[in-house]
Image (cartoon, rainbow, N blue to C red; front, side):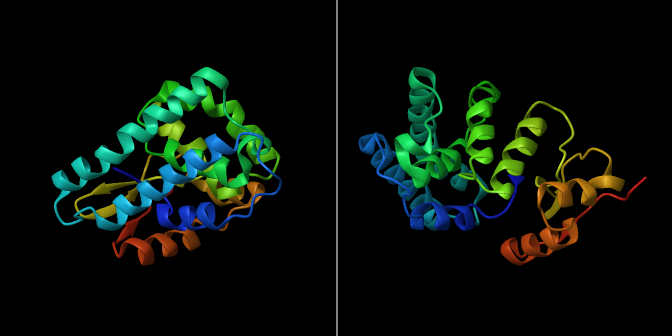
Amino acid sequence: MIFTLPVAVIAAFVLNSAVAAQATNEKLRSELLAMVKRDQAARDTCPIADGIELVKCLAAVDGPNVKRISEVIYSTGFPTSKEVGVDGVKALFLILQHSESIELRLKCKKGIEQAFQDKVLSVSEFTVFVDRLLIKQGKPQIYGSNFDLKDGKMVMSKTKDLTNLDKRRRQIGLPPISEYVKVLREAYNMEVLLPEKK
């Protein structure tokens, strides 16, 4: 299981965002927002203590949601904020995080990059996407946003050039990794480990 900033932190912004302008595809926007509400309701009610039941519970929601956004992306491309509003783009982004498909993530890459350039997606959202895609491709992450659960502890996923990690984070607008670790510790109430720099 890969950990990043708590989904609820991102989702709270998704659900409370004001739409910058009237969406041209209000039907799709409403559908995306409804999917996020189901997504968050499942994460609030699924049994956390039992790992197997948690996976089954979340899969019952994530499967149909991911299938639906795949249909949208493969038929019309990654929607813009003009089409579905800022909150609609953020909703799709959140649902995408629950997809295991590298192909779908690659299909979304250009749209995600554009949404970041247009300031629709935040720095933390963009870097989570970049790192998670790299990890799923078996490559080291760049920004240190992904952690794996090992022996009841959160351990940073393989990361490129740890010595310059904070420099890369600073350049793109992220806080030092020590601050991110503190947020993860408080959010998940777990020990969070960083690899030693070589």
